[in-house]
Image 1 (cartoon, helix red, strand yellow):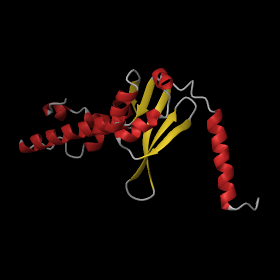
Image 2 (cartoon, rainbow, N blue to C red):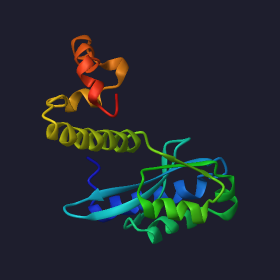
Image 3 (cartoon, helix red, strand yellow):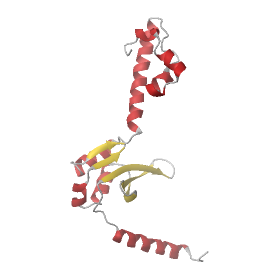
Image 4 (cartoon, helix red, strand yellow):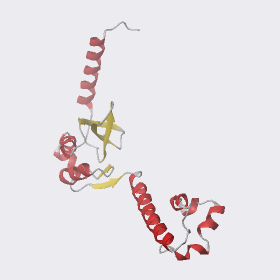
Length: 175
């Protein structure tokens, strides 16, 4: 519509980004997020530092290593890192290590997806172990109950609740 070539459009964008970065204030950044994002095909990643209070990206660096995460933190001044109260992230160990090193006083908060995922995996592991143990004693108590164990008690459908709380569960170590 404006009849601009790509070089001109890119130059305009670069100047706008430069002006925006010059005006941006980082004084109020207290809650940040660190995450990794894949792009293109395969295992190409970038690490991203975000201001959770204002919903904006603060820095992006290539890779998903501890060194990448340290680079993210180094994009903030020491005074800004000291003001940080909490860091939200997944349980990616290199990010945890970088946060402990670069913002030792900030709380690390794991995102709400990963904790239930680990809990569900743990419950399923115990269910499988119990199922094997019961099968050796010719009990099929846990056969077909995998999905029942993944429900929160308050969300368990009424017909399934009766099945879950039935007396045959008494043989379980987890009952």
